[in-house]
Image (cartoon, rainbow, N blue to C red; front, side):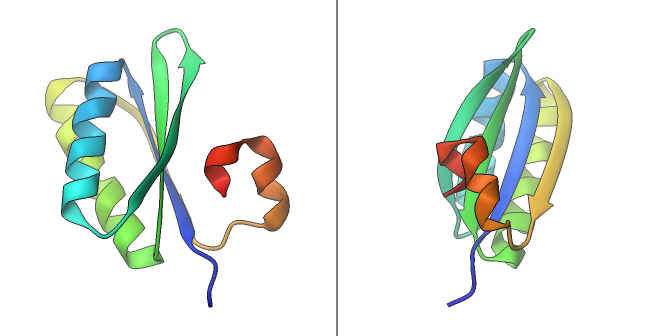
Length: 92
């Protein structure tokens, strides 16, 4: 079985992340792996799923978040290296 992709949406403020997460989870077959407070009001949500689903979810989430706040960044990693999990439990 192929390793799942991981997607990240980083926003300024928790309300924007909540909006992004809601839209992402409704738009595609992904799971929320967790979220992290980065600092200075920046928060990041992490999503797992197949590459196409994660890409669709991150795009939908970023669009929804930008309607209520500021999106700092988005990223999709198709097949994260096993050692990447050392950065946090949300990598899987």
